[in-house]
Structures are given as C-alpha cells and as structure tokens.
Length: 261
Image (cartoon, rainbow, N blue to C red; front, top):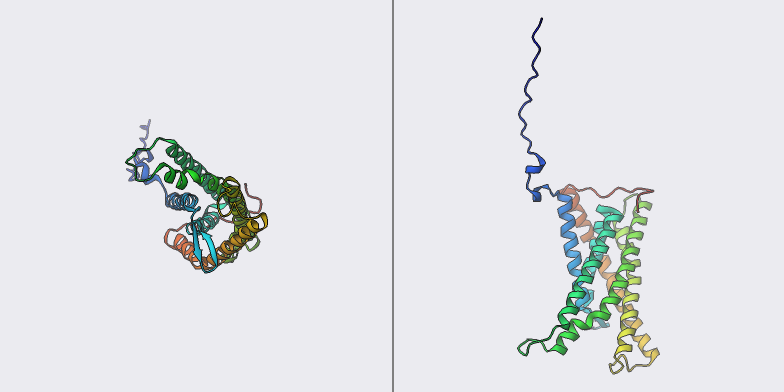
C-alpha cells in the first residue's frame, strides 16, 4: 500500500493582508482626486456665499464679488461629471449644499452669542457681515441647486449625444445654460428680498420699475462675465482632463444609454 501523498506547502506570498495595510494606503487615486475636487468645490461655494453681498464697481457697472470663486465651482462640477458620472456630480452638489447649511448655522450661532467690548468687530458690524448673509444664503442655495442639477443633466445630454467627444461643447454648453438660471434666480430672490427688508436702503427707495431695471442690468453684466469666463476656462478643462487621464491614469465615466440616475 502506497503512503498517502502529502500536499506541498504553498509558496510564501509577498502580498500583505488587506487588514494589515494602513487605512490611508487603501484609498485609491480616484478617491483621493475626488476628495481634492470636493474640498476645493465646497471652499469656493461657501466663500462665495459669505462674500457675495459686497458689490464691486466695474466699467460695466456693479457686480458681486461672489462671482470670483463661483466659476471654480462649475469648472469642478464638469470635471466630476465627466470622470465620476451623474451620480458623482449629484453627490458633490448635495455635499456642497450640506456644508453650506452647516456654515450658515455656525455663522448664525456665532452672531447670536454675546460680544465682548474688546472684540475687533462691533456686534452690528459682525451681524451685518456674517449674520446678515441669511438672505444671500437662501437665495444662493436655491439658485445653486437649480443651476447645478440643470448643469449635470445638460452635460450628460451632450456627452451622450457626442459619444464623449467634443469636451468643450458639453463643458461650456452646460455651464452657459445653467448659469442663466443661477444668475437670474440669485439676483431676483436676494435683491427683491433685500429691498423689501430694508426700505431705507438705496435699492429700497427705488420705484418698482427702477429696481427691476437695476436688477436685470446686474444680471446681464454678471452673466456676460460668466459667459466670458466659461469660454476662457475651456483650456483649463482640457488641461485638467489630460492630467487626470495621462498622469493619474483615471478614465472618464463611460456613456451609458440607460444608466442609473
């Protein structure tokens, strides 16, 4: 009778069990990129809300300084939409909304707290800068959500229609359409609300026709600037796209005709 054969010992493996890999090292490049993009997106969104009440005089007329960080938000929306799909862009939008709400709650709470006589700001100054942004916040968030979800849908429409070609068309086309809605919504809601709440202000003392003329002139100026910026950002869209694909090795989300919403 032959002796039973003994199974050979498995060759030693150089692989490290997943449980032994540090948690940070288990985060892949794609996830790290999304964290970077989301962080910059949220920063620009919240700062735009806080500073948006300040007007800047230009040769074309008055515009909000909030226009400075907001182009970054719709640039990053397009990048996330292209590489992480509709669900990734929607998640980014809801994340930005949640962080903006958190920032607003903190600002309101800090404004309500009693102030020391040694404070750099007076209570009235602090309340006007930070606590007074409640109207701007509400207007901005309504405009943000409507504009973002429209941008996401239009971007995906052009991406499917062109079979992922013509990046400039889906990036610029989606931004130009969504920013019409965004710019009209935030200006109409905020400035009509601001005029109603402060009748003594210059805007509050205008007649209804003068006020609407001022608001729509401001809308035209700001949308015109956004249009120019959207076109000017096209090289940046291509540059970011090239870096992500060639340097990071991350491919864009493929077009799915009947994908999940």
